[in-house]
Image (tube, rainbow, N blue to C red; front, side, top):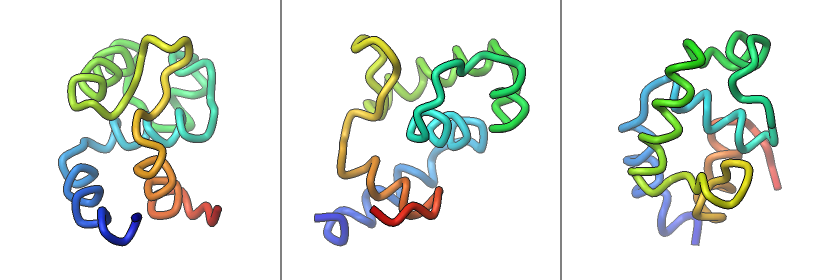
Length: 91
């Protein structure tokens, strides 16, 4: 399934900004305090305001779910592909 959808996932990832990619990495890694100064610095998320703006933008793109408590990626297959391709996680 990942191989079949890889081109679509890559196209989606290519449309994201660096701060949006950083935010997805932080969420996929299980980071809870996304707007903390340390997370913003470590993950290169810009500012606290840009974290909020990017969460909303990623929700509009139907990549994130913001209403299930902590933000999470909607598509588990995309999350696995993202971790493999952007975070070097082999699961």
